[in-house]
Length: 291
Image (cartoon, rainbow, N blue to C red; front, side, top):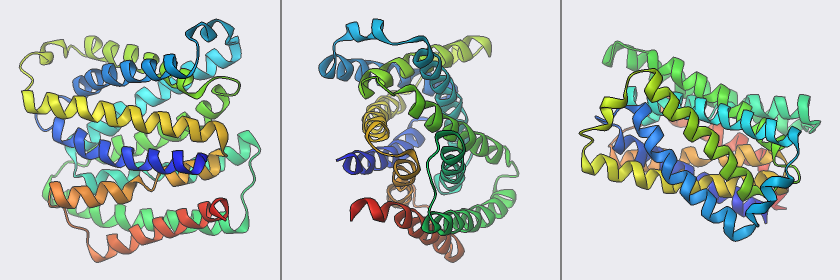
């Protein structure tokens, strides 16, 4: 059953990137992150209240609290970097770098969680790595001439790093805790972190004058993120991180498809080959779980 949750996470995550891009054309990415986190927080606590008694918060031990908070901080950092990268670069340029967190997550899951990687898994890592390189290499060259600013690359790489840390810390932090409750607690940490960033960087004045259409997309992207999170951490709780994470990364298919429809972004032949490599590697990892 967790396979379906992982696939649902991929779909909603793919939609999130498109909706968020529509909401940060003029709105500051940090401000947008803080606003959409409010939506995710409300969404996640409602689901937590439905699936488990909120009194269960008092039964969470100290170790679990530590890892839930750490994973929340990692998530907040990943979000801030990801949406800043999206604001500066095209969706098709940012997403492949962000999805490279798959490789690091699989390696960390083996080293820290004791999850094994089969021969097929090794081949899959190679395919995903080569595929990501093909997509990044072409896009980065194009960005240098088109934008003259490659800062989005740094933010995208940081997003990938923090995303992999989120997966590992989240896997440890949700042991013995209802997945929806864990998601709600984690979201509260992200909310505090994102609003602190606004006041620390002096961006509170940017809350005024946000265009209504962008605010709409920011809110909707929050709902999409909430749905993706609930599916993702439910899948992590029931499945193995080395399989759940790659399936979740198939969101790149939905993201690129919708970016073609909404933003008219095109993939070069090399980037398309890279995308197929990422998909092939991901399916190679996930296939045994479907059989």
